[in-house]
Length: 330
Image (cartoon, rainbow, N blue to C red; front, side):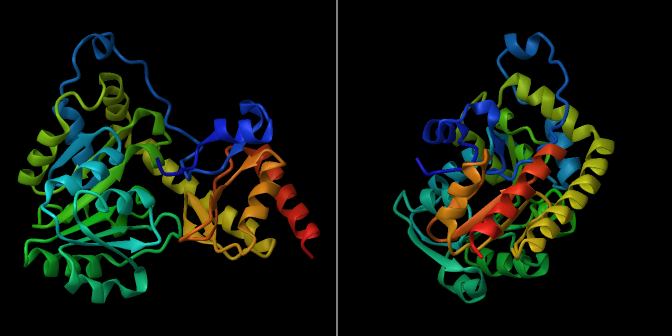
């Protein structure tokens, strides 16, 4: 399997520090998770049929005409390449590595193309996959440009797949409302913004025929009953969502300013910052020695990604670690 953030057990094993003595900044998941309500008994006892209320709540929250709940967007990422005959696929690079990993299987002809060259690449593929905002760099593509690419692809039966896993604080950029257009597939994650990664729940927005084909491939009972009940509460809680968006924008700006004050020019979104650190492995080890687990990118997006600290002591611990890094490297 590919390496991902959130691997604290590996951090504890490698560095000999107990799990409860780490600050995990490696995922970009909201550290202030939605307060999950208690679930009813039938959530555990009954087979988890998809609740129409959950789909309606997701459509309202994400502004999409039709959506399919899936066991995390990872499930869709793995299944979508199997819904097409082998074709030419372009995945924006660097981006979430699971996209290229799975499109590279099943006989597709895969190319990874830098964001700056995607416009030209649209003519040489049948499927284009982008993360918007990008993970890990935070790069964003304007909705009107993405919609123009969708039209060019759809004209020859192609797809534009847009992964908006980190898009909840950038609602104006979402393509959810346009997902009834041919060839557009939008992925949304409950885990990132709501801080509920353990639910393993995401949604796919697309035309109904494609959603039916995806549902048939994934099979029945893909999302657990408890996950459906917790997600329904979160998706309907618009007051919590509004307050959290405001909070995350403030904390995201604080993280940018903290890094900048220590000579780091990052890019990202409200939930994380990334920068092309030339001494990425050394920085990663430096932070780990101080109980801070950050995301190391050693290849395509060579650099470091940091998520938001969960509380004030964690902010202070991060600042002290940055001060020490600068002292050791000046």
